[in-house]
Each structure stands twice: as structure tokens, then as C-alpha cells.
Length: 74
View 1 (cartoon, rainbow, N blue to C red):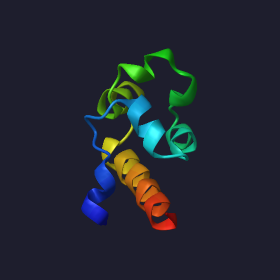
View 2: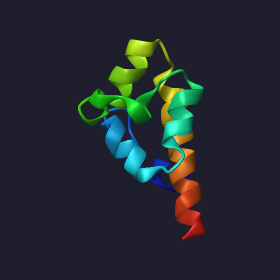
View 3: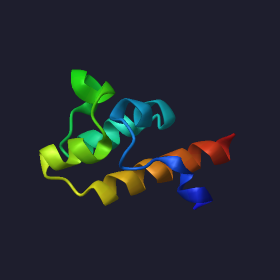
């Protein structure tokens, strides 16, 4: 994967949503309503995952796959 495509668990949720157009659906699939959450601009992916009891590695992996796909499209 292209330098893991840059999304990390330390990144703010809002930043991830800016980089990955499918982020809202990825978060929702893991039971996280980040797209409509007011705290997404202040909370990291890791913090959000922890609050919802979700595997942060799985989410970060899916988000990075999304970013890599978008980069390939150009």
C-alpha cells in the first residue's frame, strides 16, 4: 500500500473524512455515526473507536484503502 496512504489512528475524524469520500459509510459500518457527530473535529479516530468499542486497526485499514483507491483514480 502506498505509504499506508497516510491515515493514522492519531488523525482527527474530520480530517479522515476530508481525505476519504467513503469515510462516513466506513465509520457507520462499524457503528460510529461520525459524519453527524459534533465532536469529530476534536476527536481522533482512536478515541472514537475506543468510545464505541471498535477495532481501530480495522477502521484505519479501510480508510487507507479508500484513500489509496482515490489516488489511483487520479
